Amino acid sequence: MLDLNSTAFTNPITFFLMGIPGLEDLHIWISIPFCSMYIVALMGNILILFIIKTETVLHEPMFYFLSMLAITDLILSTSTLPKMLGVFWFNYHEISFHACLTQMFFIHAFSGVESGLLVAMALDRYVAICNPLRHSSILTNSVVAQVGMVALLRGLVLMIPHPFLVRRWPYCQSTVVPHTYCEHMAVVKLACADISINSLYSLAVIILIVGTDVTCISLSYVQILRTVFNLPSNDTRLKTLSTCGSHVCVILTFYIPALFSFLTHRFSKHIPRHTHILLANMYLLVPPRLNPIIYGVRTRQIRECVLQLFMTKIS
Figure (tube, rainbow, N blue to C red):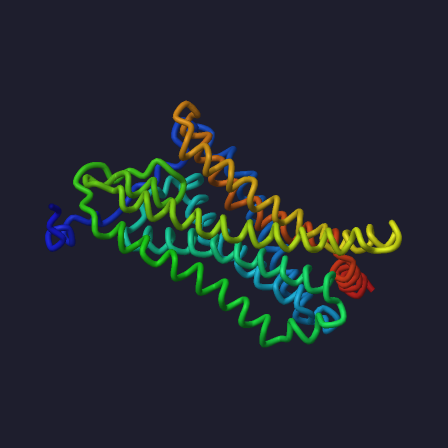
């Protein structure tokens, strides 16, 4: 049996982030689209937050949830990209053990938070379409805040065990992490101990979060579709469904890269390692970049406020 008292002294001082194994010579070129996506994510989400804060017409539940999503996207992208670009540009591969655990916690916790916020936004669409007359009385500001807090706490609480489980293992061999950031399984595979508890807990959390959230979103949209198909005219149906378009696009941009990353990591042994890592990076980089673009283009209120802002600056 592993002596836990002795393992406290076997944690490495630093880990070495390899980057993308097999594509080291292309790091500079890979960094260009990655940096571009990060800049777009920063500017887009900050603009969304500014517009929602300054325009009182956007002080509604859907836009409050959108502002929470923007903050989550900023945290997710900022917890990975600066260090990743340091690896690509300056060969700054070292990361301290505790900084690695902190990065790991933020990545996985706020991925769970984002999934919970997508459920909250599905709830908003359900109430707005199925109970429009009670929308403002059901989703009051206090209810919106409580729903957001539940999404936050769930993500944090479920991911708290991860860094503690990683910290308990001895790392007596390699400290080279074959990844661009401190991904949970990439780190624990370096431990010279039985890590089955980490694998099982990680899988259980993924199934719990994704299974619960996808089920809730699906049930919401089943009810929405039933309500829409009972509407009298095709024009009314299309107009009502169009209010869900942005949310559906955001759901797809979040879950599809996550699904591909999870499936290739867990079940495919023949896919090159650099493909696994690129997919894992897309899962963290694509949603923060696309979410503000999707809502900015498809949501009339935000589009009008952005145009009014730029027209005011020009004049």
